[in-house]
Length: 141
Image (cartoon, rainbow, N blue to C red; front, side):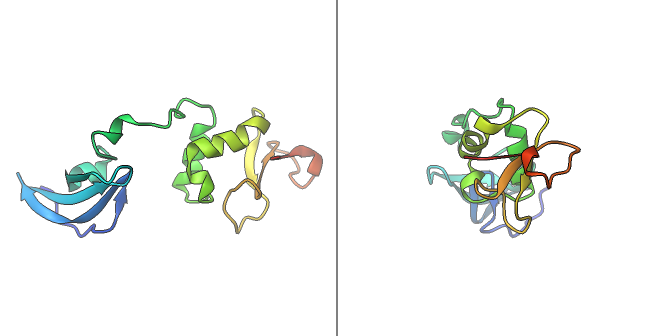
């Protein structure tokens, strides 16, 4: 049985929870809307929490098509750590910015660790090297 949890205002994928709706077969159901197309929907807490529902059925088929790209997993890891600039929260933008200078084996680093990863605050660094040597850094252009 799903607990009735106040998740009003929280976002799960592209689903924004508006309010509690009702209980159906012991599952707490919530009124939600798809952030991509604003379609209304009713979703169980269980499906929201598990990630089974991330958008409405119409938008569920729309993807960015980047999940097979070699840099996608790096983007996802940075996004999960919440260390990306607003612009780079879009995987298409992130990959289009960093892919031209990407070299296998290099890792993405920040110039200023107090700021998020962004085009102006990131560079590719050679692994296990003195990262303070500018010749071992590849900056974005």
